[in-house]
Length: 109
Image 1 (cartoon, rainbow, N blue to C red):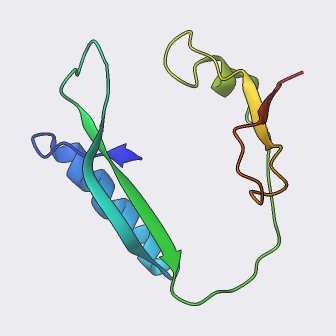
Image 2: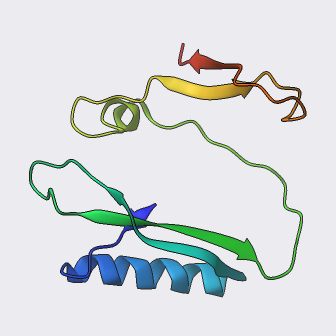
């Protein structure tokens, strides 16, 4: 999801720089759904975003790396005073092999 509202120049610049960065790193846009999502922001109620999906030009396996978000980032993750409370969601369907809606939210400790 990335901001996509043509009347705001910064959204075009953001989309351009994102695509440029991904191209430099051997990815291409495989799917783009413009104005896919509408926000409910007090200061910009008209703002929309697109769904942009990238694929690697050539598959190159890389070592997995992950870092925890800093506590101040968690506190306002969804906006001011709207914290992220779920660390991850576990799939209880055997890796998607069984049709099920079973899942579990694992909160931050």
